[in-house]
Amino acid sequence: MKIDPLHSFLPNYKPGKPLIIAGPCSAESQEQVLKTAHALKEIPEVSVFRAGIWKPRTRPNNFEGLGEIALPWLKQVKEETGLLVTAEVATAKHVELCLKNGIDILWIGARTTANPFSVQEIADALKGTNIPVMIKNPINADLQLWIGAIERLSLAGITKLIAIHRGFSVGEKLEFRNDPLWRIPMELKMKFPDLPLICDPSHITGKRELIQKVCQKAMDLDMNGLIIETHPDPDKAWSDAAQQVTPEKLAEIISSLSLKKEDSHDKVFTNQLNDLRDQIDRLDNELIHTLKMRKNVVEKIAKAKIEQNVTALQRNRFDQLMKERMETGEKLGLNQEFIKEIFSTIHDQSVEVQTDLFEKSKK
Image (cartoon, rainbow, N blue to C red; front, side):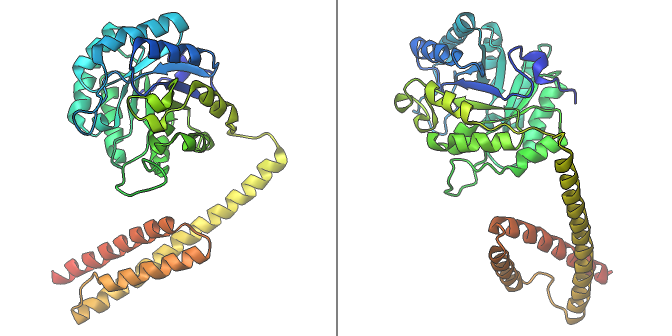
């Protein structure tokens, strides 16, 4: 998959600095759009202006955006401020209208990413253009759906691609509106190291007071930028009021960020880091050998169960195992969800090993 670097298609982007995209959740009026854009122009780090033109809503009768009439306002933003402009598209018609009105960058929202038919419709409409396209992760925690959407755009000839991490709906009440599940965007980055990855803290948090915290986390994970909803009077916003910040607050958030560098030329630090990495390598090898020894014991358990005609899965045993492992992990200062995920995976593998032996014993 061919992916162009950010600096090759975003003239205002400075390599080594985060790409900052900002603007209101929704374009509400020409005055609101231009007032926001001119305020953002005064923040040197902001290079792209965003505004929702079409708003996919969960239920009808909520504000769904002003639609086509707002597109010329974005064109005016570009003319008056020099900022690039971006809008969300969900259909081929949206694509056509954005191209007609000179929109610089398109983005595909989380609900659309979750629907391969919709993504393919957009990809077909974009063939022959190579306009930059940003793809948000799907609402549900499905890395393959996210990758599939990116691949569909790539197959349509789009090489100017950016992934947006906006968190995942997990159906639980958490600190954030959407669970960041940081491991998923990091897996995407591992699979496609050349793919620019930016973070949407507005949709992750749902609360403006938490945005700085998530922005810093994204920078710590070496993400390439941020897309932050910004409104001149957030409390009066027509959509997602609680998660929007003022341009003044945005400037504060940006100036507060601590940017990490990938490498250090300090020889003492480098030697220390290499020693610690050697320790990690040894511990990882020990873990692998321990898992192999555990598998051997699981096979012996399976053979004993076969002889006694006992089922492979015993739920009470699993529940007790998880309770004990999580209690032990908590005492050692380990995250309970981390322990739960690891031992759930190990248990699933153990059940698979046992069921395979059960099947073989029937032949």
